[in-house]
Length: 387
Image (cartoon, rainbow, N blue to C red; front, side, top):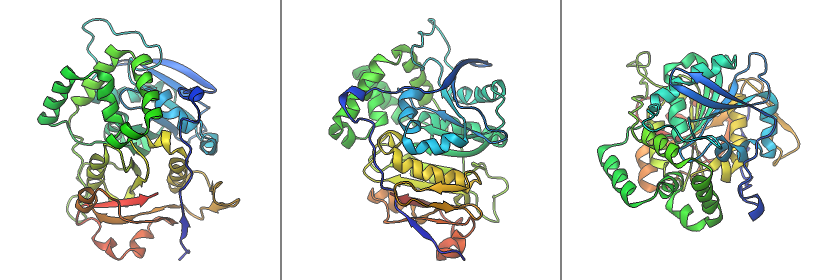
């Protein structure tokens, strides 16, 4: 049995290096497409050229954002160039959320959140893409999850940041209605994107996104997207239980990496999602000193995790740990992050993640290394990599 290698994810490079670069969400070497679907036109930006039979990385942003403000800080990060060298990237903007989008006509019926997911097969067909590795944030994570449930043959893996698998309860709905009457939409979106600690402490970042939401996103279109997301139904996924329902239960079939910052308002929702997924192909990454946009605030940590994720799927034969050594970590077969497992209730109740370390091993070795692995499907558990 190969020896485990400890990996510490420590690189931190925030979005805001100086005031002049605060809203630098620039695209590089991209082709833009407006694609007609059964549920309307969707704006897509393709970065790079698809590589043979490899999947493309397809992204979907959260409410109040577009692909530029949600993902460009991450994909323009220096170490991500190793990933984009191997994969083309397809950014999807929800209808009316792209930069410079005109307002929809009066009475326009905005697609439901399920219909937004059903736009994606037409995107793949139009661009001749055979499959994807999805990266979604918030509303985008829900949309990609729904897409993977409806079209599992088109999705090879998912990175879900701040995903909420639950429908909005009637009390939440009433509270959002009340706050909509007393609070402007920019503040509503900010409270969705960022936790209270971040709203009070990271003033430069919050001001950057406040201006972006208010000035770069069409406010009427944003309201339609927000209403669609708030009207979502439950994903109705369930953790498979060995010998009971593993062949009939509805859950994600592809490998999934769940990501949340420890100061994010979505922590409880992501833990809930993890409790419903198959632990055999799910990793839960909880980032310390991070809030609602880990791909913006901690691109280095997320890049390292994503490298291991795609390597664990059999892609990218070597992972270059540029901040740790000058040598690559070979994948004799495939490597993936080992996860420590703690009960969901303790994780949510304490608000703190169990002290863990990131490790790599061959797939399937987790069961032999962890004494509780035999019971992993018997009770909901949180699998965490803290970094």
